[in-house]
Image 1 (cartoon, helix red, strand yellow):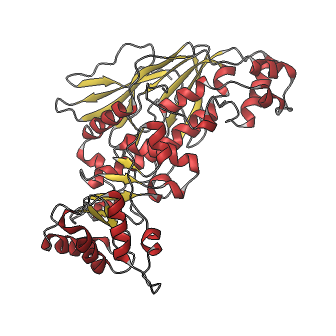
Image 2: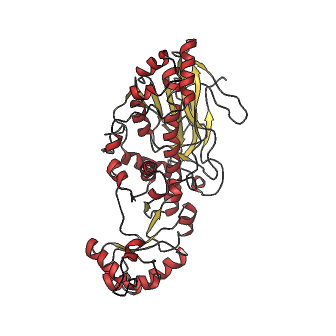
Image 3: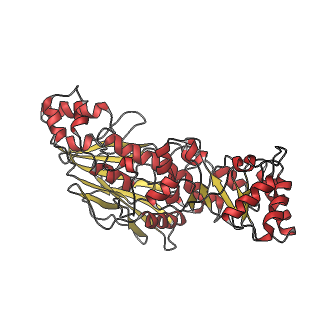
Amino acid sequence: MNAYGEDMVEHENLKSVSSALLTDMYELTMLEAAIKDGSVDRQCTFEVFSRRLPSERRYGVVAGTARVLDAVTSFVFSEAQLSSLDFLSEETLDYLRNYRFSGDIDGYLEGSLYFPYSPVLTVRGTFGECVILETVILSILNADSAVASAAARMVTAADGRPILEMGSRRTHEYAAVTATRAAYLAGFYATSNLEASHRYGVPASGTAAHAWTLLHVDDNGQPDEERAFRSQIAAQGVGTTLLVDTFDITKGVETALAVAGNQLGGVRIDSGDLGVLTRRVRDQLDAAGATDTKIVVSSDLDEFAIAGLRGDPVDVFGVGTSVVTGSGAPTAGLVYKLVEVDGHPVSKRSSNKRSHGGTKRALRTLRPTGTAVEEIVYPFDHDTPPTGRLGFVELTQPLMRGGAIVDGLPTLKQSRDYLAREIESLPWEGLALSRGEPAVNTRFYGFDH
């Protein structure tokens, strides 16, 4: 089980792995200096937020929270790790040897939407125990939130039609696993990645690649598409999906129907002008009585390509590169900044990099229809701001107390359902794929600085 109560079976080589060196050197050099000058135990608040949304984004999706909480609990140094930190004094090494995060973490639940300056995560504790968590927290939240934000836009563009995640071959082997989790959170229905299915319970899906068709040749060594299709159906049944574009798509569909009949589960097209091709293939299938045969398309799809196919007879989209890499999932732009020291607000005032001091929480106001109106950020211990006739939801929730993960956090499936409701709460212009203002404005309330 992970932090959110998910049935999760870790990879054999990842069991009980410390997250303590998933950090940057300057975090430990700051720690050493703080130990030397006596500031290491000052009570601090660090906040995760984004100053702006990436280009063309009108909202962001919080993803990876459960993984962050697990990483914090496993942030424990082994002797082998400590032995590599020869730039630190013995006093600092002793501090790290005994390190266990004992503070509190609050934040937006996984699957929440966020906007510029939303206090996505609030980490409270001593300077020493909070400062060294910066990199691991940001690396998880930035990666997962970027994927989930891109995937959510694709789900919206698909307009109810399912999307299969198939990007494993376009990224690091374990980044592929966590990207799958984030895409599933955002509404993708299945994955080709078996490790993600094993670890997080994401439904797995897949049939055959072009190599399968090319493998099959006749007695003269010539390609034999029919033999490949017959073999696949013999192994997987008539409900399988046949890849029909290895040679000629029209001929491939003819062969698929000749082999499987009009009960064929689906055909997949992975190249060409997908709009034109899907219309031709749909006519071809319907003329043969294969009206229930699904058309699956892939080939470098992103939210814009998916939106462009909205009027075409596509039943399932397969998305890979654009959801797991920077081409479709630009960085979430989340930062981790010190905002309070011993009860006093502190803030950065650098040009274009302002931060707002003080420990914060947030709520979102809603119209009676459930449409989001505004995000209000206010002091953590302040009374709830007045919202007039508008309803509201509290966004900031307890995630960790005294270094222990709180009970009852949502599962991945519950977070997935929650995000679907969050997307429905956006004003219609917030769903546009074009460049524009954030779907919901953020307002600060109750701050004197």
